[in-house]
Structure formats: structure tokens, C-alpha cells
Length: 221
Image 1 (cartoon, rainbow, N blue to C red):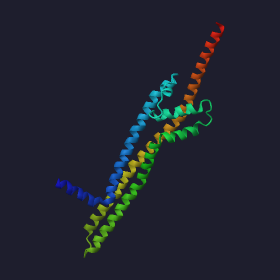
Image 2: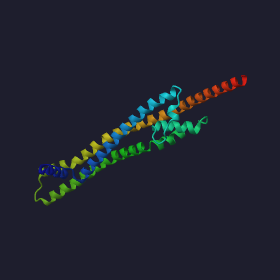
Image 3: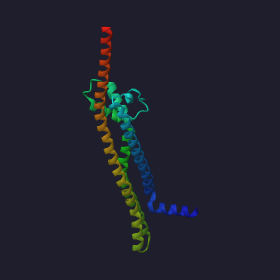
Image 4: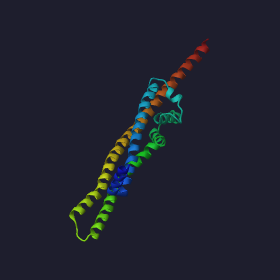
């Protein structure tokens, strides 16, 4: 226990407050990235599974939908079909609004990742400048400059700069990967909305034709 406490104390002396903040920021960025990847993968898998019913001519995924619990992509298509029907001139704008509303948590997470990728190097630079100030202050208190002490102090001060870059680079990569995936979702939502409207129109036309045949047969008999 004492060894562990001493180790933590030594690490804190090396990285300083800025380094501690960077560690916490890195944990937060990792949590957001993992959650986003798992969530978006599950959304896409469930969407492809459920939407096949609609493409086979069955509208179960739109009739039995629970707006509060359904797949967000299915919710978007459901709202498009429900709201527009035959009036689908402005599908893209409507999908854009519904996409923002249904994926608000995802977009907020992406904003956080973008912010972390920007502030992480700045936090690392802050820690380095802070460490350099401390090093030169100690050097000024010494009667004779010592190159080894100066080199050791500068080395420790630069650790936070490295930490900031180590946090920022993977975070920025995760941000762009997830952003491209989300844009793909947007494109798929627009495309499948048009397809859903077409399928629903065919279903309604088929039902209307059946009703017309039944009415015609009744009139004959």
C-alpha cells in the first residue's frame, strides 16, 4: 500500500495537475467512443433486420412501431411515411430534422470528441509550460546551474505534451470515423425513406384494388 501511494505521488509530481486532467479526459473520450461504436453498430444491425420485412411487402416494422423504443432509423422512416404519405417533395429536409432529433445524443457525443481533440494538446502544452516555469524557478534558486537537473526537469515537463498528443490523435481519428458513419446513416435514412414510401404506396394500392374487386363482386351478386 505504501509503495502504491509513493508511486502515485511520484507520477503526480511528473505529470502535474494538467496531466491528471488529461487522464480523466482520455477516460471520458474512450467511454464516448466505445459507446458510440457499440450503439451505432447495434442500430444498423437492427435496422437492416427489421427493414427487410418492409421490402418483402410487409409493413410490420412500421405498423407495430413503438415510437419511444424503436430503432431511431425506423422512427425516422415511420415519421416520414406517417407525415408525408403522397406529399414527399421535401423528404431530405424532413429527414434532416428528424435525424437531428433522433440522433441528438450521438451528435452531442461527437461534439465532445471534437472538443477533446482540440483541448487535449492545449492541456499538454499548459502542463509543459507549467513544468518549465517550475524548473527555471528551481534553477534560479540554485547557486550554480546544473545541466543534469535542467535536462531532467525539461524531460518531465514535456511528458504532458506527449500525453496531450496521445489523447488528441486517437480521439480525432475516432471522431472522423464516427462522423463518416453517422453521415452514412443520414444517406441511408433518406434513401430508405423514399423506398418505404414507394412500398407503402404499393401496399395501399394493392389493398385498394382488393377492396374494389370485392365491391365489384358484391355488386354482381
